[in-house]
Length: 125
Image (cartoon, rainbow, N blue to C red; front, side, top):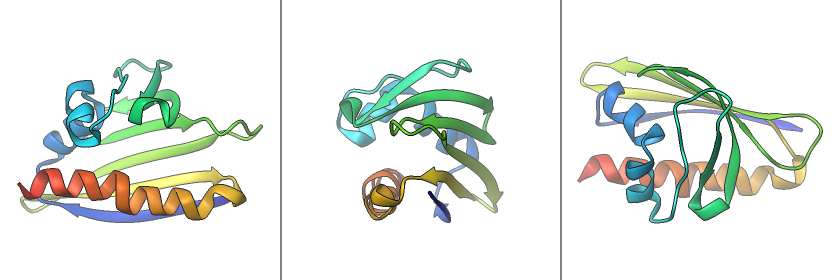
């Protein structure tokens, strides 16, 4: 199992970034696929029409989101989004723990190109 951590600078407020990560309508806009999301702890979520699924564990409005991503492993794979104000922008810290070794490279590419590439493009418009 491996861990991933990276910071992304976004040209948006923490409130706007948080909304893009938890609002199902906004998720569908930037992913281009059906999404199921709720800010209710212990609720199930689904992104990219089921390509990413898991459980929402914790929310701290406009500051923090913690999710468990399902990989079929015994050890939970935990994703933590931390939103840090940075002048008129947001520094989004992503920590993803317990990534299965055989999925690591694919997950890192997904974070940097698909997930965050799409989020960053949304705020460049």
